[in-house]
Length: 139
Ligand SMILES: [Fe+2]
Image 1 (cartoon, rainbow, N blue to C red):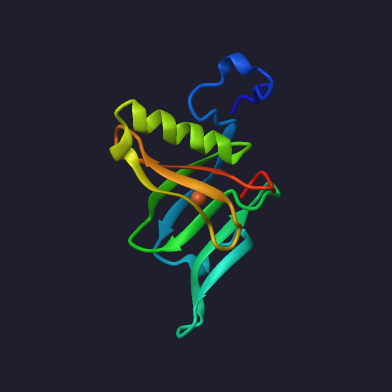
Image 2: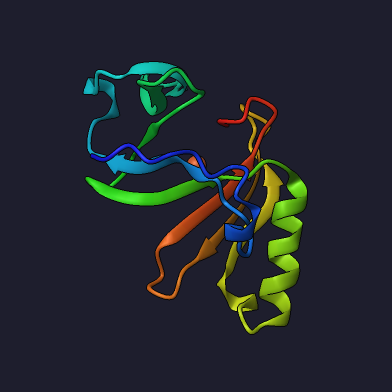
């Protein structure tokens, strides 16, 4: 893959919610317990004492890819990191005044473990997109 120069200070390119990079992917897998990434966070089924979901990383952030028990493998969502909650509020204003209100799926809200501020939206092909920000810049 070609490595591209950073565009964080090319403000003329900023559009809409102003995502600066892909933050992570979240997928379903038939057996999260057998996946061997380094885990940063996880949840466990208390009765069965097996992993229910795991947030994993390879590049040192909070997570690069997450796996949740469910019918799969299939993609749950792709997440884009933004620097502040105001980016998400700007997107909500934009979507609600330009005919995209029905594409807002869930949020804004806070994730329990990471405390990341998030919004889930559906793109024109119904793919779930998460927009999020967190103090750790990778929540
Ligand atoms: Fe996510």
